[in-house]
Image (cartoon, rainbow, N blue to C red; front, side):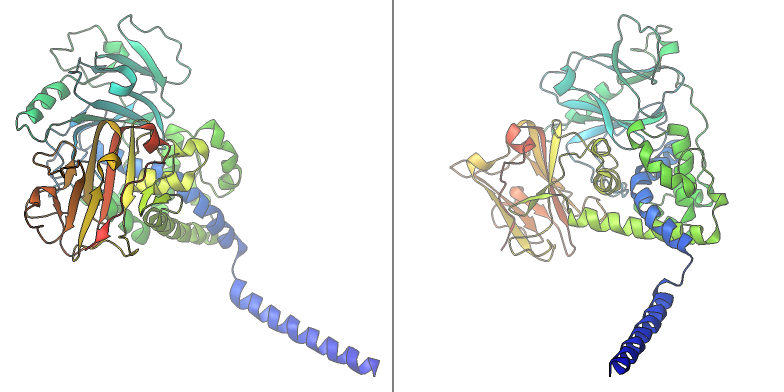
Amino acid sequence: MISKWIKIVLSLLMVVVIIGGTFWQVKFNKDWRAEYAYAKGIDAMVYAFPYYLNSFLLYKADMPYQKEISATGMVNKFRHSFELVNPKQYRDGGSPNRDTLYSASLIHAKAEPIILTVPPIPNDRYYTFEMAGFDSDNFAYVGKRTHGNKGGNYAIVPPGWKGVLPDDVEFLAENPTSWFLILGRTLVNPNDPQDEARVNALQKQYKIVALSDWGKGDWNKQTPPVPQHPAVNDLGELSHMIASGVSMVDFIKKMVISDPMSFWRVVNHAMTVNGVPARDQNHFYDWAKLHIGPNQDITKLSDSERDGLSRATLDGLLMMKDFSEGAYDAKQVNGWRYLDSALGRAGHKGAYMTRGALQSLKGIVANDAEESVYLVMKKDQHDEVLNGESNYQIHFEAAQLPNVKEFWSLTLYDKEGNLVLNPIDRYSLSDRSEGLVYGSDGSLTIHVGQNTPAGNDTNWLPVDGEDFTLILRAYGPGQDIIAQTWQPPNVRKI
């Protein structure tokens, strides 16, 4: 009897082994190298994404200026927007604001310091220059909050530089990467048609000067020589899409479909040129085995490893897209999302998904919370996605209006982070909007949707027939906003 049961048990074990072996073969009959490359590649892709996106921007920035292509002609010199972002021309995403004029430059400072010159600015004028490394993390600021409006000359120096700065130049910071971005914002008064011209006059006085050229001319009256920089790396066969004016979003989509391995070629080059922070070196022990990182060559990969990294490129991008839309690290308050407080310097805290998905993919760079806080709204009070076929209200009680030292604004974007086109060319409302109607008790109701609200069209943001996102910006935010304790009202579908 015992022998019979032993035979039955052994038979069952054989069935389990056979079934298990068959399942294993069906499910996992792949070269382990491909799966290893895929698993490690997802992490590496999320970490390295800013290096790819900024390589795209750098190549585009080095092109001769063409009006229909944004961000061009801005290597080691400023490319100014002399009017508010034109939504019909700019479709590169990044959720641009309608509050300030931009002054942007991609800077190379490896051999010597570069000096940022800012003129005296009227005390009631907000301005800021944000400096972010090639990894998209901020490393310095010049602006009203940090330096006041007196003007000055500020040096960004290569790491370990031991030279002496002129007496009229103030040390600002070491640049963490050979290439870095300066993004300037200067406030415009939307109620004054002449104010853009005043800001333009200031922008023309924003200067970038190499230390070796300092004192060789009156740069207040002349244009300084463009500091020397190495040739910008060509992005290969996909570069013709940039030349034809394709948007950044479309470029990235086509990259992962037509040549996913181009991602790793570009990233390796960018990391070789710019290096990676010492705090992140431990990640590269595994990645180097897949020839990812500074001075690595992906042509040495096996076919299986190449297959794994190709899949990781696409899936990593989809993960970042879903993460940014779901804002999984956000604090929810009445439907509004306070984004991760690490935003702006997310890489410093190891928050690489936040850095890749929100800081880089969604915005290219992001301000530190002390400078500005952005709150994002995607759903109404019923947890349904905001859509232009419906109409909505946002009602602020007087005590509920944003507590800011500078200004607040509410801006409407499509799913790609572009301003939503509309027939009256109104893309945002703010505490500076002319004719904004407040209640007798100081409250404020803003209307959003396709239908003009009766008798209150100055408080209206129009949108028609598409999903959209609202971003509330608070510049010079109060401590309650920085601490994410302020509670804005929900968006109510009516």
